[in-house]
Amino acid sequence: MDGGAERPAKARKTSWKKDPEAVRQNILAIATEEFAAHGLSGANINEIARRTSTSKRMIYYYFGDKEGLYCAVLEGVYAFLRRSEDLLDVAGLDPVKALRRLIEATFDAHANAPHFIRLVMIENIHNADYLRKSDIVPNLNRSIIDKLSDVCRRGKAEGLFRAGADPLELHWLISSFSFYNVSNRATFSASFGTSLYSKAHQAALKERLADMVMAAVVIGHDPKSWS
Image (cartoon, rainbow, N blue to C red):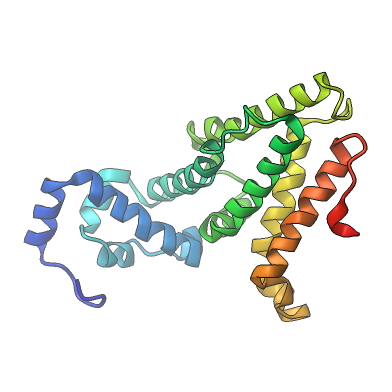
């Protein structure tokens, strides 16, 4: 389809009848781009419909209204981020290696999900009003806390982790570093240049994050990469 042309209604209807789930996913993909770029108030349903393989009427059929579509987009970006963490099996690793793997995976997941970062920033402007309506996101977010809880429990039981190691605090610390790395890239680069965003420097920052967190949690941890 030409980017500036509207697909004929017949073609849209045929596409919807053949694979309605594919049409729904197409709507979500385009809507994610639009909401991330323009926010809830700035995104335009007509523009989303123009760019998809369906119609404005079908967008409302699937999602109810603009706010319903926005909520579905939020759930989708959270699911994308957590899916990469869920695929990470750390149960068979010793607690120290498992913690480092989780830290690095969270850093990478945020770096690979700029739409997630922008949408979370937008949702914070709305005081998480729409996120609170979701029954899905709390369960999605629970998975990473469960993984960190298991790692902390095993680490403490083996005498490797400090008694105060808390999974929720760890998640906050790891996420804040990983989030800032993406959310403030434009302003940080404008102020200080882009050197920290080279491939090599991003790898180094990921190591720095892992070392800082592990130094706070793992008894006797020596951050050799800082020497």
